Length: 83
Image (cartoon, rainbow, N blue to C red):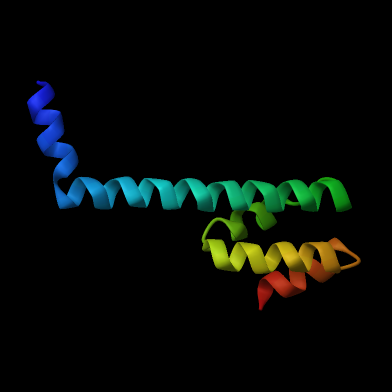
């Protein structure tokens, strides 16, 4: 059994799956941090906003984080999120 795992770990597709898992973890973490910042700044946020953040990649979420820090209202953030 151990030999099978070693062979599996060396396969290219295993590495690809592992990297994808790491990427998804980073993306999910960035999304959760953005939601946390929005809640701290503006209180509860609509579920719709959380759902709209789900499809964003890490770079987009980082840019939205900058916007979340700079805007003066949740409505202003939602306008940015819509663009």
